[in-house]
Image (cartoon, rainbow, N blue to C red):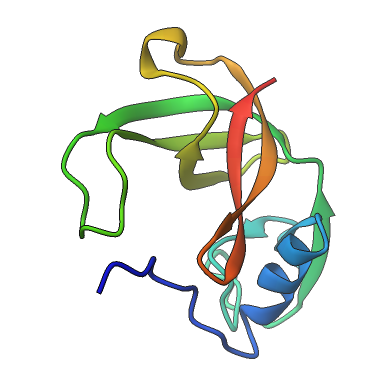
Length: 130
């Protein structure tokens, strides 16, 4: 009942999760539009081609927006926790968590870096102040 939700495995998302397990921050990049695609998709939403390749990203970025959550989605989530939209150095945005820092020490545009944490049986990318 109190287990953390696990990522759903699929042929499209597995390279992302495998990269996290290996300590690599992996995203798809369209070879036609050159735009990053996240979450993993079967085609590029920008140009509707399937010319997507996996890229290892730097893991650096800045806080675009954040909020402190005091009521979790289920009892599995320890509160409070910080949900944030990260503007990544490669030019795309990702919803994630900020760890190892309280909300009072965060600010918009603050540099962050990816860190990989164990959540249940999975390793997931989160962010911490750089």
